[in-house]
Image (cartoon, rainbow, N blue to C red; front, side, top):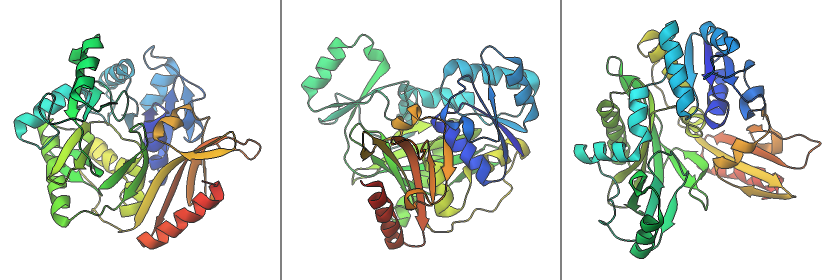
Length: 372
């Protein structure tokens, strides 16, 4: 199986790694010749999709299917148009993505369906979280301690209609992926816990999660229900928070995610890219779902000026071209721009074990070698 991946930053890094893990041949396409994932793929093609560079079109034609791994509207529109004109199989649902891209649209959909979610200002109680409607993850998120802070922001903001203000809920955050089509049906996968840094960016993902079987069932039901609501053809991830009352949906994103798929792979044994390829190329799932019930952790570390810190994935955007190492700093897998002759580096550290205790000991040894 050959895949053309469009975009080599966070999502592209995830996709290329998953492609290698399931034995796919990967062609990575990006206009930036030094994009982080450029050195991870089997082949890298530097070219502009929007301009329809000849080498880009040729590479896309080679592939069994095309996967956009970015959130650039111009690029996504161009990829969809090229695939439509060339008759190429596309592992992406633009209609579902447009709904999930707008927090205003997706929140309205959830509220109409009665799916639990944080309440909007002025309902609920302070503190609040202020988010740009068109961004995913932690991009642009602000914390408002009081209602006065909210009013001040909305007064000073040039485009208040493009922002949402929700009550801030305290509690653990979880994510689940959904893959499928109305014809093939929908599958959900291992639930991961999302750990945030000081600027609300995910710095660590762990699986499995310490939640009840009832919560697992409820979360899977929510995920499949949302996939049906957006008429999903492809992949979507759903993030919730457990505020002690219920699992409340924070956001949905109908595109290949970063971070969580690798944690899911080493916890359950299920490769989400392989699953997505099945429904894209064959129109149905080819494998039986399984769960190897291992404990996995996926986290980011950066060393700069002699100091190692753990941060959210935003730091990986500015990484140099990456490589995969086994055993570096005692970690089972490291995806990083580490070079022995350089002091600074940025990296993704992945570990897994048969028990939580064993994983904790392993992670402790890695952090000790890093000097955290």
